[in-house]
Image (cartoon, rainbow, N blue to C red; front, side, top):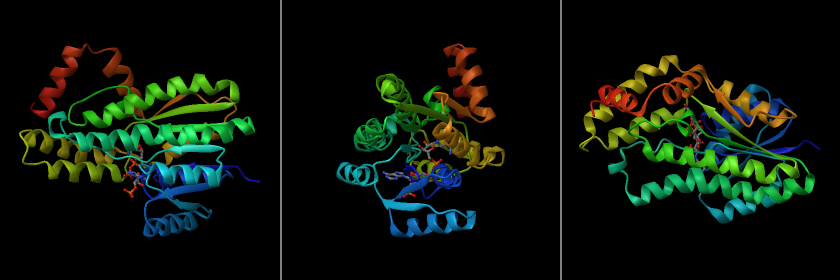
Length: 272
Ligand SMILES: NC(=O)c1ccc[n+]([C@@H]2O[C@H](COP(=O)([O-])OP(=O)(O)OC[C@H]3O[C@@H](n4cnc5c(N)ncnc54)[C@H](OP(=O)(O)O)[C@@H]3O)[C@@H](O)[C@H]2O)c1
């Protein structure tokens, strides 16, 4: 029996690359999608890659659906990848938007992990891979809620990893830098929607930085391979920074630069 791994947000970007990579590695790879049309996109991409990927319909903010999917699949592995940019200055994000960010990228991954744990414990073996970001380690302006969600997933994963270690369950954080996926299109669209804000000029600078950075971004295959290692290594590294930009930012931005200098650089580059 092939071991089941559920990856959320599987129709695009890192999630899509991950379900294909896990199928290649021999897992019964199941990807969650929100619509039937997106399920067809996953099947087509998997077929083009010469592998088979199953899909399940799941909006991760639906607690009942999360329970139903986990009970049905009883996964060996869970990859919490579903997410979005939540772009916007702190002052521009209202309570409902902020709640949705935390619901999607903090509560939902932890709920899915909590639901999957009894099945993993019963088997004495399991893997939970949480898609964090280099923005779980550093903070810059204009995506404060996104970064708050990634800092939270870092803290929760660090706690969970130790709590479940004796049951044979391994918890891994993946911390990518910039990879070419749908999240950047979605970020630009969100910033454009907020264009009338007092932060409008800073948003325009951020958008142009995203467009300029596009050619430097790699395809998300490298992140998928890191997830593959997290699923297959006997002792996977508990956190994996993926990409040279992530490694440079984590090392230089946080460790070498004093806060006053970081703030000054961010203000100059965004005109804040
Ligand atoms: N790309 C990067 O540079 C980068 C860097 C660091 C971390 N990450 C992280 O990587 C993960 C994947 O992002 P990506 O870059 O691959 O972006 P993406 O291409 O936009 O994919 C995001 C996926 O999440 C799904 N999703 C969003 N909200 C959902 C919900 N409530 N329920 C179920 N699925 C939901 C989307 O589904 P729909 O198509 O239905 O909206 C889509 O499949 C995210 O957690 C992101 O924070 C990305």
